[in-house]
Image (cartoon, rainbow, N blue to C red; front, side):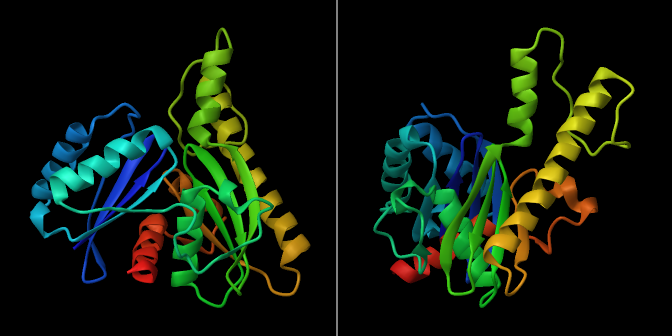
Amino acid sequence: MILCLDVGNSQVYGGLFEDGHLRAQFRRTSLEHSSSDELGVFFRSVLRENQIDPDAVQFIAICCVVPDMLYSLRACCQKYFGVEPLILRPGIKTGLKISYRDPKEVGADRIADAVGAIKLFPGRNLIVADFGTATTLCAITRDKEFLGGNIIPGVRLAMEALEAKTAQLPSVEIVPPASAFGRSTIESIQAGLYWSNVGMMRELVARITAEVFSDEAPLVIGTGGFAQLFTREKLFDHLVPDLILTGLMEIIRLNK
């Protein structure tokens, strides 16, 4: 069995694969000062709760954008699973040609998303939109060239900024609004958060398509915790919630 861990700024998203199939998924809050023991006990416990023997885990792949957690994660894998994890970082085979000015700047999560999208939709131009703590868009050519993209404050991050930096605006539930304008402060924030992201997605996809994919329109792939919020707007050709885990599985295959 293979355990894949996506360690983001807000959450740890994990998936357990058996014979290439995703058997279990789980999430926990990312705490950058978590000890290896805290992580190890949690991972083994959550696997047991899903009727999975933790000792059956043979490989572990980690995609992490929180550098302060890497030491504890690696020690956790060694102590609680007896496994040296594969950590996605420069030097790991991904099959991508990175066209960033400095390829080392590309986040591990964006790399894993790109690899997963190529695995699921080979031979196509792609735009991957990942709605997490930050919202990222990545443009990948049919020839597996990672061109770059956009990084924008995520939906929750924007809401938290409003709450923290204003005197009278409250925290609100993030939901699709009934209207493009609100008749209360809460409704106004909800409408503003939602429709600003819808407009941003449509504009950026149109501009990226015009600039680099004018010969063949790309498939737009949605993923990340908030992507399903926008399902009714048909922003994506495909919604793949576990895209990053699929990418980690493919990276394990490439590096075995």
